[in-house]
Image 1 (tube, rainbow, N blue to C red):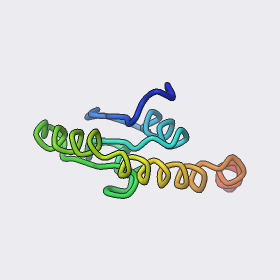
Image 2: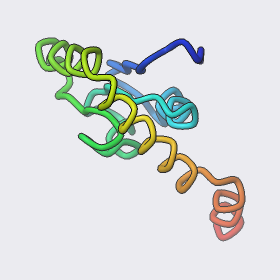
Image 3: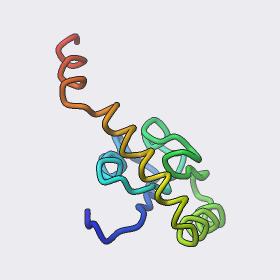
Image 4: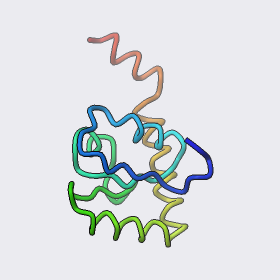
Amino acid sequence: MTAAADLVVVPSLDEAFGLVVAEAMATGKPVLGVCSGSIPEVMVDGETGFLVPALSPDALARCLVTLARDDALRERMGAARRKRAEQRFDPARVEAECSAI
């Protein structure tokens, strides 16, 4: 993922894990994703990005324009994503959870 990106759009209808969403979290970029697969499990709508209904190009476009026009909103959402990534995907935490299985 390039540091030049301002946001990440994930319109996929079938995401088993949503690795690209997790990667965007680590870079602190806000995400615009669809309510499909695992994407809603990784995101917090309105806080770390926007979730839109699947197969809704109008909703996707509205949120994309909102994020593109609002630098401060992108910064807030990006910071919230980074914090959530550090909490959810901390290597020690993940290791401990996997060891417990």
